[in-house]
Image (tube, rainbow, N blue to C red; front, side, top):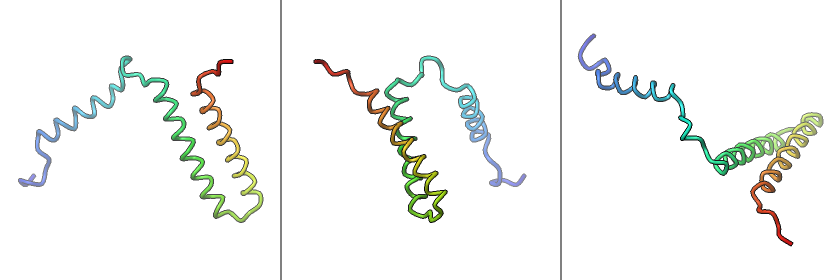
Length: 92
């Protein structure tokens, strides 16, 4: 191999180390908190909702529109459920 065309040994060693760390995955002590899990679910649902609304804006077929509106309603319901889980119980 000509000089300057390959990766240096240091680069190769660093990539192997990164791959090894990625394969090992998170340890038990690195478990995400319930707030982080909820935030991740919320973000996923919000992105799905945005995608569905974008598709609804482009869709002209009634059957497709009906399916997308149903999916949107389900996602909105799930988002509301996540919001209800985060609220502390009301005291009377």
